[in-house]
Length: 160
Figure 1: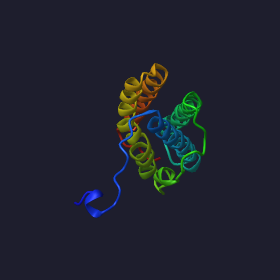
Figure 2 (figure 1 turned 180 degrees about the vertical axis):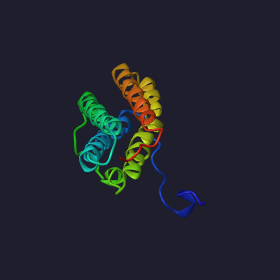
Figure 3 (figure 1 turned 90 degrees about the horizontal axis):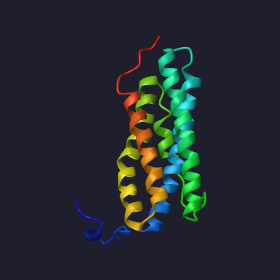
Figure 4 (figure 1 turned 30 degrees about the vertical axis):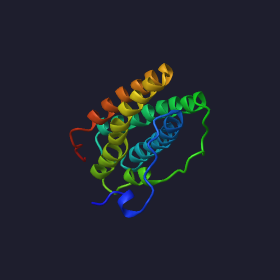
């Protein structure tokens, strides 16, 4: 596979600064909003077809994502960012809108929570590098939540 530069395209900027962190916080905010909406919709869409444990797990997911939205809003304010400064997409939301419960749980888990678990350690390291313990600690708390949420759905749910 040819690299972007080999194709005559500009390379992505290798930003490891506050601006880069602000961009990622904005993306995480919208990911959390979409996870909250997707998990909430799952509770509503499958109420009569799922076990109580599944409905409770999805409700906990909504609660966790709502905490993350609050955290990311505060962190954006902390780095002098604002909602809407970066483009927003619905790509993550689409992961959480599959037709079956199994696909929906996988969409929220793999499409939303999994990528957050991958990027958060990098952002924690970046916050440490730029010397911002507030962001470092807040993202560490969010990472702990995300890991727990991913583990909730390691086993498939039974459909009633």
